[in-house]
Length: 232
Image: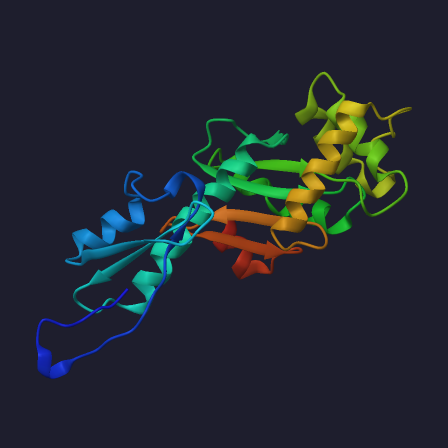
């Protein structure tokens, strides 16, 4: 894309390529990022076939702030990731109607996951935050079986709470067996965790006020915790 100020004497130009794959093929309905650019006074001057169903759209107009461009690029990705998290199998901690949603990858044997669970109590108890735990079994040999005990419980939220309350005494009793269905859940959650760049637990994901994805590796420090969970 070529951006040019209205005043030719202060010419500024730089290039930006936007690729929209599959459902953003040439001729497809304009995505939100393109509509936003046009609303800011940019004009689409040409559309190119980039192969594999991708479209590259060239624009001309006023120069845009780098932060605006970064936001435009980040939001579609954030929406896609958020939808992946929402459709995954997770265990609720808190009120399902709480306005702020936080996702976290949790191993039943993870001491830092337990610290995060404890630190979040004021937000959970206030009804302002719900935490959705995506269980994985990676820390100890019995982590998958403990995750299976939680996922196989008639009340998963109560089983999660039992594990966290009893953390210093070994947590919930491991399940006798892990069903293929539960194993698929654990595998899928682990793959999603890795795809988001987490290599350990907890791996915390939230959306900020601008709709951008924010990730926290490990137990957040006080300031980061308040940032992740929002105001009390």
